[in-house]
Amino acid sequence: MTARSTAREEILARMRQALDGAGAAPGSPRAYRRLLDAGTDITAMLIDRLVDYKANVHHGLAAIGAALGGAQRVVVPADLPADWRIGGAEFVPDTGLSTADLDGMDAVLTGCAAAVAVSGTIMLDTGAAQGRRAITLVPDHHVVVVRREQIVGHLAEALPMLDPTAPQTWISGPSATSDIELQRVEGVHGPRRLDVVLLDD
Image (cartoon, helix red, strand yellow):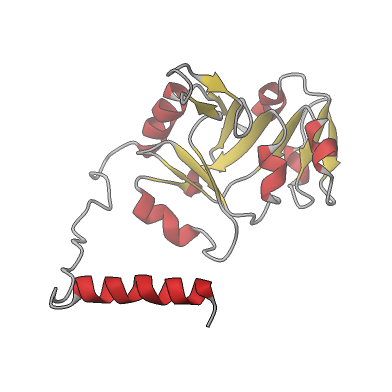
């Protein structure tokens, strides 16, 4: 028996001793709220949260070009719908581009899997029109298209819409941190600019 396994067994033995006679663990309450009140305008709530997070919100397919804001080279998932490729940019399908290639892109354009109104969170699970995680984390500007039927009120409603076996990215506004002296710094862990295009159909 190695020193490492001996230490492991000693720690586990101490844990068993500490828990001896403790009884069964209490159940976890599951009565948390799962739905918003009937009549709540979840789209308006999502927009409010996104704007509060300093994301830019646009409406309609024609707004994609404006959301890209003059970007010259835009990386897109290979399966991005053709009618989303609007504007004068060069749309570069991701075929396993390197990190350096992605860093040289002006923006990325993707779809999403779900959007949660109460938290203003947009969720991606590498599904249709989303591509791999890297393309949404390296470029400095992310334009994401959200269809109305993808908007839900609470997180509990969104989880069944996601692939639990796929890598997921949950986005609540542009990447930012206030870890250093409580000063907000954007673009630390991902794109510093987020534009959301809402589609009615």
